Image (tube, rainbow, N blue to C red):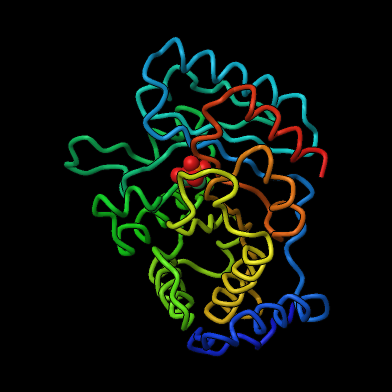
Amino acid sequence: MTKFCSTIPEDGRIGGEHQTLAAVFVIKSAGFCYNFPVNKKKLIVANWKMNPGSVSEARALFGKTKRAGGRLEKVETVICPPFPYLGMFARTGTARVFLGAQDVFWANSARATGEVSPEMLKHLGVIYCIIGHSERRALGETDDSVSKKLRAVLAERLIPIVCVGEKERDTDGRYFETLKSQILASFSGVTGAQLRGVCVAYEPLWAIGKSAKDAMEPRGIHEMAIFIHKVLFDQFGEGAERPRILYGGSVEEKNAGSILVEGGVSGLLVGHASLDGEGFAKMLRVANAV
Ligand code: PEP
């Protein structure tokens, strides 16, 4: 039976100077009180965002990434192109390379100009769906809409990748509380059994869109992965399934290996570095080797 550390206080707050100590304690404690879900395959998700600008570039990037991912036994590669390109790659997924969407609407039928339904995605052969990316949240996505989208995606048997993460860090550790409420609100209405098919992407906003040196340190990522599991465990109870946790925020070829090994995560959500076909192929090979 999985047991969780009770090192992080109920309200998620860890005071300023004690924060590092607490983090170390959580990590050290992890060995005997916590087991991460064991997934032999690493999940590496390419979030192309609003790129590339042309159909021909999209085809070339998709081809390169699919060829690279297709050779790797220990990696599941997910490619999330912008909506207009999804149809071009419809049903081209394999057992190792999957198609993903960057967003979705929360119903299959509604008057919803400009939206795309979970059912439409499914018919295109989409398997994974990003929900609640910070760039969507910045444009008005709320925890409530994330929770509706999550339920709609699960009902359609797509695999959601729910993005969570704090905007900034403070020295009092209040970001733990922020993250906790974001997670609880985003997962409202979901059952513990449904967590099995869910991925949670931890993406601290302050680390997104920079370079590898600005990414979060693996030790900190490990601490946050434990925290996310604890929040869900406390909410859903002992019988609940454990989701896969991914990290996103300035992952590049050079830091991917250490994040996967020391960060205690099941995979990565990769933005800008997924647009460089050669570099991303190298990152996939790194993930395959760890
Ligand atoms: C993202 O936008 O999900 C992301 C992780 O971006 P980047 O890798 O560019 O930081």
